[in-house]
Amino acid sequence: MGTEPRRNPRPTRITMTPGARRALAAASRLFYERGIHAVGVDLIAAEAGVTKKTLYDRFGSKEQIVVEYLADRDERWRAYVAEELARVEPGTVDRVLTVFDASRTWMTDSSPKGCSMVNAHAEISDPSHPAYAIITGQKQWMLALFTDLVRESAPDHPAADLARTLMLLHEGALVAHGLRIFPDPITHARDEARGLLTSVTP
Image (cartoon, rainbow, N blue to C red; front, side, top):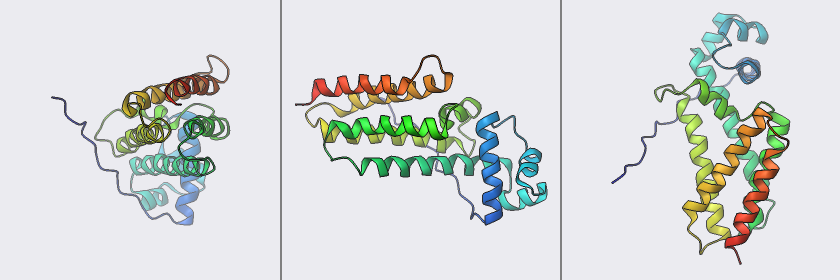
């Protein structure tokens, strides 16, 4: 019999002062553009216009800066999806497709180099890292979201299997977007999702 994967608790967050928010904004831009390992605390401090000591006083460690960077993006993404879903009638196929629409807008506006969580996972694969739970937690949340939306729109269809397929389409599209192998992969994934959903809904 299989067992549930072990889930690390989400790490503790810090209270953000205005100075810490400025430093986090600089770190977030640098981490996303250059990669987490490539960006040191010295560079973050210089870009934020603070001393390295101030940065450590605010965050304690580079690991905590990474935690705040990913947690902030995760929170903003979840809030954005919730806002977009609130505009759509519950129980419809359009609710699922709205997730793809939200991703396309988000990636165009905020993530031209691909999903920040996927990119971070390429550098942080150790479950003991405090940011690991944020990365995997977002993807677990996405799967749960698709499962709930499938149950709404196709209550007579096994939700788990279809939700996993939708998740694969969605996440594959995010990776393809970052790699720029072909144009508009998220719309392509959305069209495939519509076909799947249409085949199992009245």
